[in-house]
Amino acid sequence: MQTTTKQNRRKHKIECRLIIRLLIIPVVLFFANSNVFGQTPAAPPYTFGFIPAAIGETDFSFPLVKKWHLDGEVDLQIVTQGAYDVGNPFAYAQRFVVRPWIAYSGLKNMKLWLGYARNKKYEVKESGNYETLERRLIVMGSFAQKMPKGSLFQQVRFETKFFDDRNGVARVIPRVRARVGFNHFLRQDNPNVFLKAPNVSYYMEIMLKFADKDYAASRFDIFRQSIYYSAGLTKNLHALAGVIAQMQLRTNGTQFDIYYGPIFSLRYSFTPKERETFDNVDGGAD
Image 1 (cartoon, rainbow, N blue to C red):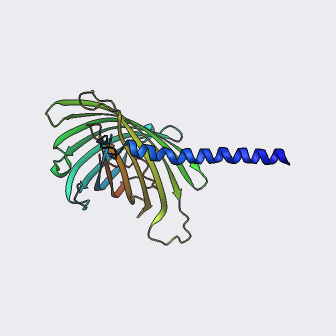
Image 2: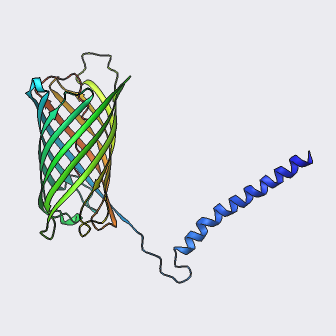
Image 3: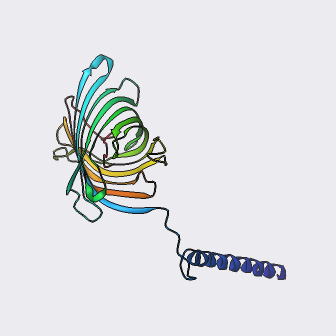
């Protein structure tokens, strides 16, 4: 009995010491980073700016060579944005994108893409964006796994960006993008409803850039998340509506821009499809 009491006291003392240390640590950090003692606080390593944005995209897909499992697709995208002090996500045109693809679907649960993108970026002085024309060469692969009530997909994209920076210097910047997402197939009891084969989907994506050190010292570029609802209007036309949020590190290496806002997409397929999940939809607010 005495031994148990001593052990409980010892345990209680250890817990008290741990609690005191946990309380002291934030206090010490507070004084260390404040000017209570007349010292100038250290500048924060990063600053954050919040920019509302909206993305609209229209895609057209069509068969090319059926026996070779080759399809074509053309994406048209318009991105608008506000600014740090402008809350309207449609206030300024940020970019217009034309993106043709060739897709190969001859592998089980996999799809390979080869694409080119022409990004016309417009000047938005309120958020520091400058006007330029950016071109991209893209190779992408997607792998989908069927689930009991949906699908899980992984995607890797390699792209090289060609553009002139704000000083007129020609830049060639390779970038790697990795995406993972999940599509939940919603139950549909009424066959006469307007929206067919509805889904709720979510993905997160990270992008790393490999630029010269005089342009951007950090490899990190963008972390993006999106959640959206999609369904078929007809067997050829499908629609998407959702929201996107992304964190992008500017080339100065000290400021993160947080983009957030609505996304909309329409996809017309010349080959009828029972279900479209928009796994490769591109959130282009960078």
